[in-house]
Length: 326
Image 1 (cartoon, helix red, strand yellow):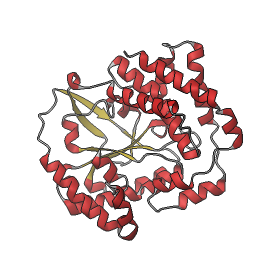
Image 2 (tube, helix red, strand yellow; image 1 turned 90 degrees about the vertical axis):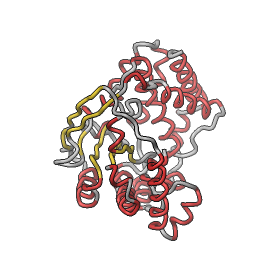
Image 3 (cartoon, helix red, strand yellow; image 1 turned 30 degrees about the vertical axis):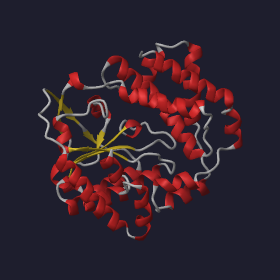
Image 4 (spheres, helix red, strand yellow; image 1 turned 30 degrees about the horizontal axis):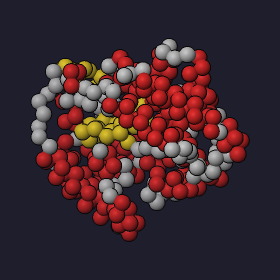
């Protein structure tokens, strides 16, 4: 968790954000020491018993911002990371308007052990978030982060190995062949699913409905992740999000599933004023945090469409899908 926060902005505490405004480098260096110290205290773990080989093709899509990210990574951090990957819709060249950039980066262990080197790498990785914002100014997450040692006891439920076949490498000649050692008997396939259900239920039960487009996209994205995590919990293996919808649909009535179709349609028709898009894209201060503040309001016609009944249907479905796994 700490490494993920650190790579995606450098800040570990709320107070770091104030220091960041005055001296970003100081925050990166200070927290690099904390990350290094944490990993020095983590006990070594034996290699997991099962080895899975993952082979990943190079990204050859036409998105200019993904291309710019590839160039930036190659020029600045190639020697410091095992590999970098894009998955989800960009990994299969099926992105739609305002698709999230779903990225995975694997840091070399030797980088974690060197505070100065770690601070430099993370500063560059944080810089790449500008490309994510150019793809979608309302992007609500950054890099998913693993370490080289994670490959020897792979966290299968956090980033299922099955997803690599739908991912693309952001390097032409690095990290395209991976050996993942997995202990299938020690994987908790339901934990992430239950946490997500409870998070959505808390928001909707309290009627803490989205107040702007950033919050709305966050909620809808979480809701549309439910089928993938449900199938993972049900079948004890990972599933590509695209295929999870039809597979999960089989377990529900047409009436129950209707709200998932409606939410999917809202995301397909996503729009934003160009003026607002440029404002958020060019905002560099604390990156994603500014999107929460400067996000445009939800358009009137969309607000009318997503009324109390709409959100209640989302809540009912979330409860129903969680009940399926009990």
